Length: 401
Ligand code: GLA
Image (cartoon, rainbow, N blue to C red; front, side, top):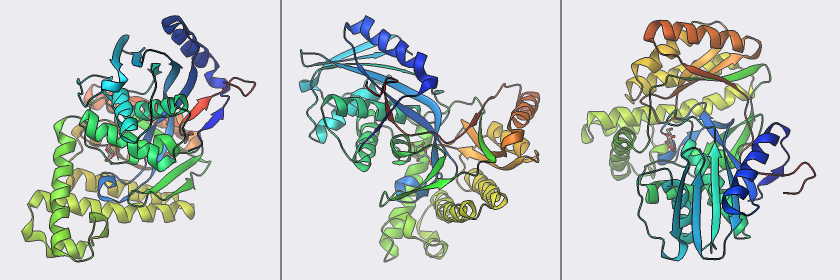
């Protein structure tokens, strides 16, 4: 894919600091890249059964600087963890250690599975994506690493392959189950647009968010980790239900193809949990397509109502919300400037996503923080966001690296 190369004036200092840190550490000048986090507006737990999602990139990112080395080794440095990890590329095997470096190392492993010859390199990483908040810090690390190493190898791959190989790093190297949404969004989103992604065909469409609206993210501060069991439990329940539908209903290749009637016909053949999880996914796919229509018609009331329906389905059928997040959604929905609110990401904590009138966004944040802290004793981090660009190379202001 042709990653954009651009000069970002707001990142001038970040860029200089990251390049300087790399030079001081490795004695070499490097090239610099950035990949954003994402928030999903609607379409949760639909991606790994070929369904629809509607994420947008946000203004938190992971930044990577890469330079060459001649000894065939890969040296990773994380500024956030202040730690180095080093390995010999040719003897790289699948051996996750359970730490931050599994993500970038997994990408090297995955690139090699794709037949990309990765020569020795130094890679330093730094970033401001909140960890464990359901905003895809891991996908931003994977995508920025893939981008930096493809550039280092003098190669270019289409967006679909970049996202797929990053997902593979996460699934097969790190050992965390996930769909394709996060990697695809981090690599392929564009500013001022939400992405409607068909996770089966990987066809996508960029949809406008009305300029009068803002997306506000509220972090419940309840930690979530995709690598822990809960995400895996839910995806296994979905996949078990999908397997029954595939067996029993001709034409159902993926859960995405099933209707509620198909599901009802198979109710007694699956666990009660699988039935409810699949019902969430089937209704959620419909809601995403309805949300697309609402957006195109500029009907934000309808869009917001669909978000709330999605939250209820996620809470009741998918059983993957939590008390604090439900409190955040309830507070949000009492504010007249808020069109819709729901949990976003893998679930079991993390953040809510809210669509709010732009001019009232700051007031909304102040109210939510005050009431949430009053009810739970927790201070929520809230961010007013606009849809940002997906991954890019950070140019100098003269257009060069
Ligand atoms: C996590 C996964 C995604 C997706 C969401 C839930 O973010 O990484 O692939 O499944 O959860 O929609």
